[in-house]
Image (tube, rainbow, N blue to C red; front, side, top):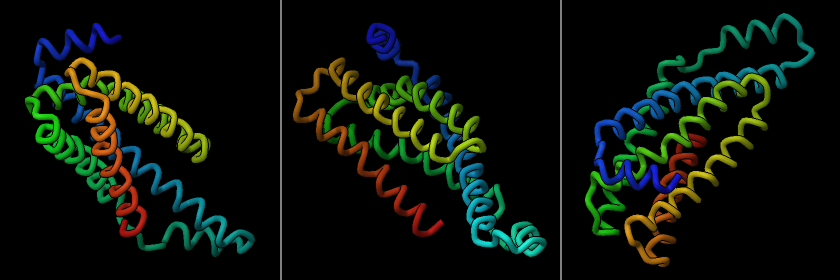
Length: 180
């Protein structure tokens, strides 16, 4: 696996990384729409359980943002996340921006698989979907840590690079939870 990533980084396939990041952003938008719809349906049915026709009426007629709104939020959050984190890591690690973005591009294949599984399982179990996301995030972070070896980064900078990657994720999740 490391040999594949090493060859990918040597070839400097920036356009492929942009395409992969675009696909991941699209899947993130789709996943966010499905997650919001599933959470809304669960909340409204649990809140109004036992009220019969009223529960169906409120679920259908409640004014909430459209799926396009949530899709665009997921799409733009994911795409700009990778652009901004790549810029921050470029400055911190003193490496080429395209090299860092390519590093995320090849690792985003892991995220792509995670989001496809998440989209498939969101209607079955939200808890199982969260478990899938958590496990794949751990794989992603482990892969990110190992791939930084290819850039000859010392251990201290690798750990700070992981923090630079994880902190914006936490901030985005908090903002999405509080305001959207």
